[in-house]
Structures are given as structure tokens and as C-alpha cells.
Length: 437
Ligand code: XLS
Ligand code: NI
Image 1 (cartoon, helix red, strand yellow):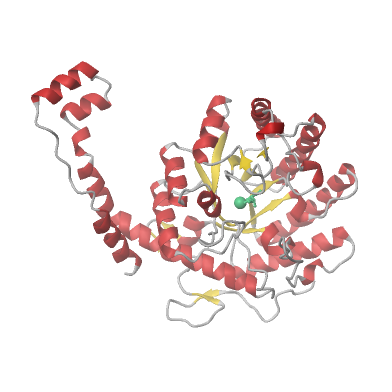
Image 2: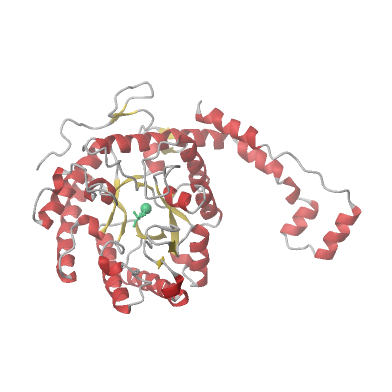
């Protein structure tokens, strides 16, 4: 079997003073942070699409990336070579999980039947490699955006034929995911939305989207798929407006259509930013509502709104994420690097530098967040800030015992309430102490 990443061995932890670009400075897989190892806390995954099948094309230029595993002319051979490269990469970088879309695994054939046969062949090939290496599938999904048949959406297409075609793709992707013991299945609605409301029946489309998800859940039950279902919100891009705009919009949608008990959320940093939120907000909102599932770990560029998906290096931002994840007691899913090297970083070893930077960034943040939460400095502050809700009038309100006239009477009988400082700067300086400890 060909070796694709020649000259690169197992990436090891060498500590924060190491200058070796192919070593971890903070990520030390078996080091314990609290009661779990870093590896158990972080559950990193490699994204098949950005890392192995993409060539770096953008709207202004062709692909630039050197990807020797894509050289074969035969699509199935190409897919097998790509799987070889993927398992070699995961092995050398020390990442246990991967994620894929059906279309990343092998190129589509002229007919659906033939595409499915290709998928079966490559899934069997990957299954053997998983057995041999112990690597695992964090989640699978179906690409319902790329082919031109999906130009007006998949589940929300005005044409029922396209809905049926998309359903066939999800059926196959789900059964492969189950066959590979996938721990989850993601729905990202890239073209489930609209370009203009002038040509859109939004009411019907939303109902159809819910019916589509319901059919998938029903099929999963039939085949005994026990993994988690995730919605991955994104407000726009490629469509002008996507129905799964952010976690709050997705939450309302799932509640309306009675799907809430079946889904959690896969939250992506760059999508949160596009929605005008921080990823901390999205994770926090999901956590307090019990729907935090998994994370697509990347970051946007503050100067660019478009699809940037950079490897995470903003330690402050990832520390805010790790605070949410630790407070959630971990994730049912993991941290999938839905991130890509720049098209100018076209060498295969650039893939290592990107992942090493991202893994170190999260490892450093895990430690900072753990230290901060252990100290209870934030919790003690929060407890004090909200203490008026524990007793007296606050407790009555929380317990639902208050009436509006009773509260009016109470306010009339007491002095005008006094405010306390919110102490934002103090709290930020506490965070900094743990970050740069
Ligand atoms: C695109 C999405 C996609 C999903 C999976 O913006 O992030 O890559 O993660 O379909
Ligand atoms: Ni994503």
C-alpha cells in the first residue's frame, strides 16, 4: 500500500517549549484533566471532505491542492486510495474519529443504483480498515447540496421528485452509517431555504422538511440505528436564507413538529458567526435547553463573511467553548475539524500543521476551562449575582406563587431596588489568569 505522508511519523506530544512543528505542544492524549484523559474529553474527528476529497477550488479559481491519493482514473480505485490516505493520516496524527458525506467517499455514478453499489464497495473497504485500526465514525451524512438537481433544495424542493431522490440518498447514507457503527447522523440543510420569497411556499417547505426528518428517524428505528441525530444550523450560504438559521430557530422548528426528542445540535463555530452569534452563545443556548450534541470545530475570519472554515487558533474563543462543553458534562458527539487549509497551503503536510494547531488550541483551552471551573470563581460570582431568586419575593416568582398585584404591593412597600456592578472586566481578567497560567 502506498505511503502518502512520507517522512512524517507519529505526531507526539513534546510540551510547550518544543519548536518541532510536527509535535503537539499542549495536546497530550493520555494526560488526565479531571477524571478523563484529553483524548476522552475532546474526541477529535477528521472531516473527509475538507481533508481528503476537496481540491481547494473557490469561486475565483481552480483547485490547487496536491492530493496524490486522487490520481487514479477509476472512481472506486480513487476512493480506496483516499481511504488509505485517510487512515494513514488519522493514525499518524492520533485522531480516532472521522466524519463523511456519501459524496466524499466516492464520486457519484450516472445512476443512483450504480452510485449505491460504489458506496457499498467503499464502505466495506473502510469497515475493514476500521477493524484493523480501531478508528471510529463520529457521524455520517448525505450531501444534498452539490449536485445541480438540488439547486432549489432537497427536502424543501418545489418538486416532489427531488424530495424522493434526496430520501433515497439519506436512506443509503444512514444504512452505511449504521453498518460502520456510526455514533451519529447529521442534517445540514445547505439549500433548505430560499433565494427569494417571491417563488417560495415557505409553509409547505417547512412541513416537508419536518416530514423528511421524520421519515429518516422512522427508517433509523427500522434498521436499529441507535446513534444520535443532529441538526447543524447555518443561517445562510449557499442559500440567502436557510431554515435551520441558528440553534434557537432549529429548536422552535423541532418543537413545532414534535421532533425534539429525536434530535440534538451539531454546532459549528463559523456558522454561529454567520448568524451574528458567538459560538459560545450557540453552545450555551443548546446546553441550557438540553440539546447540545456535537461540534464542528473551525473558526471564521473576522474580515471575511464567506465560507472560510479556518483551523481554530483563537484560544480565548475555544476556552469559552470548553467551558460550555465541560458544564454540559461533555458532548454526546465530539469535535469534528470541519476546517480546511488555505488553497495556498497546497502541500500534504499542511494538513498536519492545520490539525496540530487545532488540537493544541483545544487542549490548551480544555486545561484553562477545567482550572477555571474547578476554582468555582465564576460559579461563586453567578451564585451571588442571582441570590435574590433563592428566598423571599424571588423564590415566590420562581415557584409560580407570585401575582402581578402582589408584586405591585411588594414594590410599593419597599425602596427602589439598587443595582450591583456586572463586573465584566473583573470576570474577563479571571479568565485571563487561567488562560495564561
Ligand atoms: C457546511 C457544513 C457541512 C456540514 C455537513 O457549511 O458545515 O460541512 O458540516 O454537511
Ligand atoms: Ni459543518
